[in-house]
Figure 1 (tube, rainbow, N blue to C red):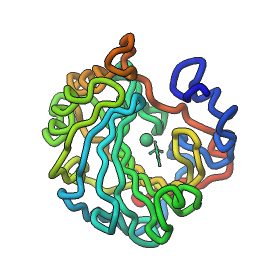
Figure 2: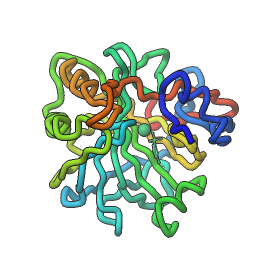
Figure 3: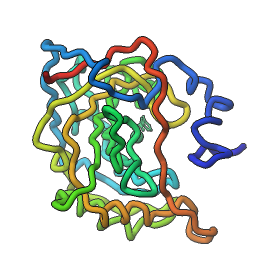
Length: 260
Ligand SMILES: NS(=O)(=O)c1cccc(F)c1
Ligand SMILES: [Zn+2]
């Protein structure tokens, strides 16, 4: 058994061997190009109602830095936008590159951002998260691009300060009292399309809500993310970088925009 990853021998081009969904026709991420985007005036605004008390732990699973939330009831929810009802916040995580000029999963008009923040929510009409992942309307991911700039968002500091406690795979630390909506940019303008989870098994269960406005992080903050290791404490050090999947064919999918 050889775990999937982002290296040449276990990376995105190999995933389909153990995870056949990876070759599906509704895969993510994709390129978002203005020429293919359709403005949909009927799209509603989205709303996040998060309880800071739902935040539990921050962890390094060797593939990303993740913050997990209590999703045992409708405590922190996302609703509106393209969604048919409320979706429960379960975790947030990041994808980033080995340098500031790449690292995001979605690419916008040819622009790669330094990273991408994903807030993962599941549809409570299904009995649990794993069941929701088997449904086309099971998951909603709110995606926010990380752009390197001079005036970083101070709210990112809380997450990055915890990085020192989770340097290696398997480490986790308490992460109480955190409302991830403080990370949101000013504008709620978004693109939306139907796709997949960007990591194996790559189920096609995701309603993507991708914010047009990136959040600004500093180059030092990106370096902090890159200081994470994909290995466990007592193993040879391998930096956790380039944990992003390349863009997949869009095929006949429509990307809708909430803005003109
Ligand atoms: N990268 S992602 O598509 O947000 C994702 C990763 C893992 C699980 C999941 F449900 C979604
Ligand atoms: Zn992700």
